[in-house]
Length: 193
Image (cartoon, rainbow, N blue to C red; front, side):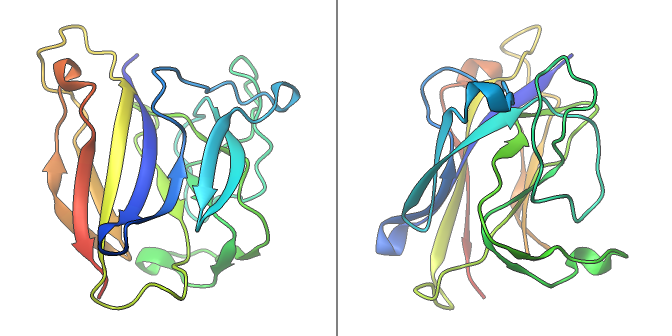
């Protein structure tokens, strides 16, 4: 099975601050998802540090997801994780005109996230509110740093083309990635409208 394991980071370089990040570029993949083993991935949101754990993905899920997922070990078919990760905030807007009820207020950052993109689970959605310090016209960079792409031939272009969306608008073009370029992060830049 092919998969991407990722580390996510959103920054706005004009103010030289990291808005949020999940994970550390330490050449390991937490991905345990076992609450008994603790939350081993460091994370920050708007300058506040906390810990999370990647959990093995469990297939495609529709919006809105559950901001109170409880994780579970890889071998547990009933592990509780979905395609939607929520940072603390208020989520009352329906994305893409979908037919679902938004999750509303999320009091704490979610503890578990999908650890990877796979052929059977190619979606990952990160939900966050912007702090009051962010203004229209601010420039952002979203960066993904890969842990493993599991390609049979490292020189092959990955079969995953990543697309980054903000508020229903595609940012930049699809970007393929090569296993031979694994140590290179992949980024998208965009301005807040």
